[in-house]
Amino acid sequence: GWIKFVETFYPQYVANLSTCKSPQQMMGAIIKSYFAQREGIDPAKIFSVAVMPCTAKKFEAQRPEMGTDGRADVDAVLTTRELARMIRMRGIDLAALRPSGADTPFGTRSSAGKIFGATGGVMEAALRTAYHLLTGEDLPKLTISAVRGMDGVKVASVDIAGTTVNVAVANGLGNARTLLEEIRRGHRKDLHFIEVMTCPGGCIGGGGQVLDTDQAAVRARMQALYKIDGHDALRTSHANKAVQRLYEEFLGRPLGHRSHELLHTTYAPREVLK
Image (cartoon, rainbow, N blue to C red; front, side, top):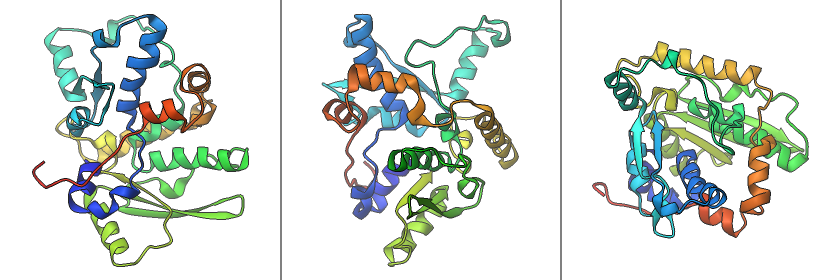
């Protein structure tokens, strides 16, 4: 939603968008490359389905640039509400199912990735890793409270080895428009990094979630994510051994040719109805 919003209404800022694909698209690309190669499966025979709290993910998966070698990274997207409906239709009792682990390398997840679902979560996860990459150490305090919460626009500064990094988090497209208008008028020139969540509260309040989602429910989900993060032993993305192994065995160095081909994309200005 945010990407198309910029492409349509603020095309002058398309060049400022991160080229990183979303987690949905990265997962799809890795499944049809690394996983397929390791398991000896023809990528053309893989049908990849993502389950997301967001209806806009359906459009994202169909974008022509979201693929590799003519293959879509993700073939279909179900919302959480659609999946819940399918489970009920089949009479499946989730509580009675035997737990099973995820296929490697997809079973090991950092809590930095888990808080992506809340507004400010992407920013917090990125700052944790940025600090480590620039200093070789972890943030003294991994919890960055200044970017958390339901405020419309949150602004914070983080000192990284003597350099002040100024960041902003916009909660919902209405607040994103307000922030972009300030930037367009020449204000907020001090900002280095901006996170925008289209849905209020983040993905946990997405359009694919249960229809009666209200602010209290979104806040409860947000607190649940932060509770998971606070108790997790693995709280930074860069420390994930599965990710490190993926680079060593397949992707090569970060921002190298293969990782750029599979994990990054391009965007372009578009007309309102396209």
